[in-house]
Length: 92
Image (cartoon, rainbow, N blue to C red):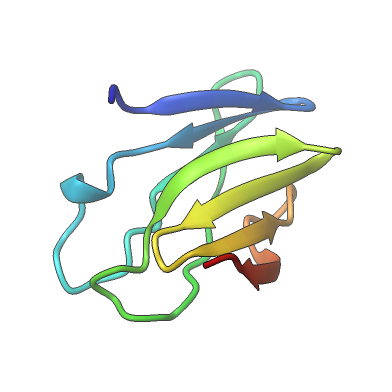
């Protein structure tokens, strides 16, 4: 898999970075949002779970919402203006 994974959501660009490039034993806040001029708008919020597995493995734009899938099996809906987790659903 080649990183970063880039998707468009409305007027922002989302980038998912490789979680393995982040320090061990810390949550990897590995999704960032940028405006059309390349300015960073936010870095995704952590789920505050086990730091060794608190990172995102997939992002998507579905039904007008940003979804970030966390390695701990949570599908998170992300606030597009702040990067905070609005809701999460355990999927396993």
